[in-house]
Length: 547
Image 1 (tube, rainbow, N blue to C red):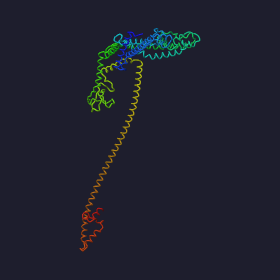
Image 2: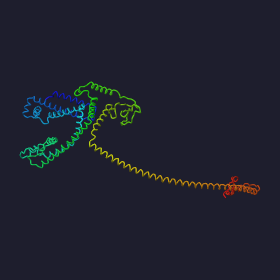
Image 3: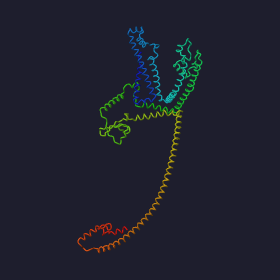
Image 4: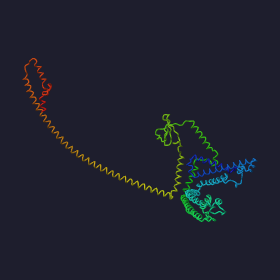
């Protein structure tokens, strides 16, 4: 057991394909790479091929070790003595597969390799959109697969339900169970052969879905279990009705509808799919197909050297520094005290030790991501267009129409509720406006009454003031006249008193003058006042004013 030349060639192709997928994953990212179904198929295909070759390599290694073991003559004697190690080595060099284990690594390797071959040749369907005849058919097949995946959950639910029910009904009639409990040989029943265990049950219900099983597969002859047999007929009949009559016909109708939709717009769909295929090969990717891409090309060597020189240059030289104008700065949204964004996505790192100098990192965005290039933006736009076109043709289904109808009903209810609330608020506003109007009207009437009252009070006050001024004028005139009369009377009385005083002066004697002055000082000042005021304001004038 050795490796064949064809297997080495296939392994080289698988390794080259794996290298291509790794580069695409690095360029597009995991989310963008797995968005295409063909990339998922490629990942599954590579995984199956690598698993198959790994299991086959284990089998070859075990066989070679067994051959080395039996080169010793004593190993055959140990095998005759049924030594466990000798028996194990003999197993790996036995060519007859009748004695192999059912899960032998070589068996599993061949099964996985067969599945990988199916996926490999189905991958060729990606090239069908180039042809104007096969392209629409390939698109219709893809839509049909989508319909099958939608119905898969309902199919699995119904199949599992009837499979479990029929297996629980016929578990006793399995050959292994009957052989342990039967007193004598009764023979196998059709129900036990088709539904005795879970494996037989799945096989029967799966092929019965396509009408390849007879109706009497639930018969229990020679057992006289009539009730169990009738329940088996009822369950199997209900299963055929649900799967064959209802779900399969519905699935066929949906696939026919998808094919008709593609056929109506076959030219547009074909050109759209062909453009997608062209853009995959126009993009910057692999120069050579697998397995030739394993060989280093001059372009790859140049890129590696360029990256190495760039890394050395960035490591040896300091970061570029340039001054940024104040009007180029935008509010710092990064949360870093030393970083500011210009133009919305270019971070500028501020060096606190360089007196206002800004360090610019070109081609970088906030969070360490690279600045989006023209190619990236075009890729995003194309992906969005492809998504809209992919989901746009499936918008006329009954479920989406029901959802749209429910949304319209919900929107109508929301609008009605909003209008009722607005009407209520409008009524409240009108009531408040009316209350304000009434308050303003009452205030205006109160102000007018106050104004009239103030006018009347002003008029009355003006009249009383004029009367008071007139009375004051009369009083002042009377006082002036009385003062003039009192002045003339005072002058006359002063003259008479002076004459009487002169007449009463005695002759001059020694000491008389001093006594006369003392007598004058001891005179009551309340009648005449102080001597120094007699000339300007005599005492009798004060008596006259007070009277």
